[in-house]
Length: 340
Image (cartoon, rainbow, N blue to C red; front, side, top):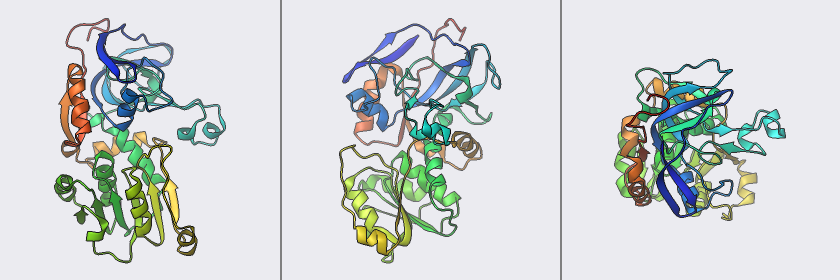
């Protein structure tokens, strides 16, 4: 099969590699669509410490099951699936208490083992979720980021009629915006320093969109403030915008050594809750359901698709901040060992 192989940081190429062989409990999926996210960029650059090299990246993907190992129940060859990339050890303290996303031996398809920037990928069959028949593969590849957003809402307070402020109008910010609207927000405001992104924010139903929270008329603040950027400037501004008794969520990924200033007195005096949200946890199946029910405008979210051979161009497009979700379509065009 053909695959995008990152040999070492900064060095990648499309290569012909052996087709994957399913072991017990495994499935092989023909990859129809795989999204590019910030983690992939860090892997290519050598900035994601868990990653071994060489590696085939790609953890946001959907496709068709083409082979199964022994002892597999629940899916069949021919099923169209989205795949949860999470690989929890099941043995550590955090797995034992049901918080596998904090697993001491955390791994993920495309991050620590070969992933979906390839014609085929081997995955645990238990991680495969059937897609509704009307959901195309490109939309199915959005399920993984959506499942991260669903987990983000899992750790926020259940509060109908809250006013939301979201920093960032990239993929995750737009997903959080749509979930907030669907979940009964009284209003949703989105801030992004790139004014070109604000028209889509408005088209997806936000009540307000601006390049700075200073432009928004809400001096009392917002009950829920979510940062989807990882930018320290956004983090510090967002913390200052939380209404008394409200919640600030750090959803965006900041550099590990980044530091932000907060007012401990205000956190105490105004009873501000600060929560983090990391990756996927018991949320993938619900994300499939939400995608199937049309809660997310997937057509608006996906703006570019490239072939494996165009991966370099896909990276340039990502770095340029053009469009929204960028996907690669690596499906085999010739027959393989799987007859696909």
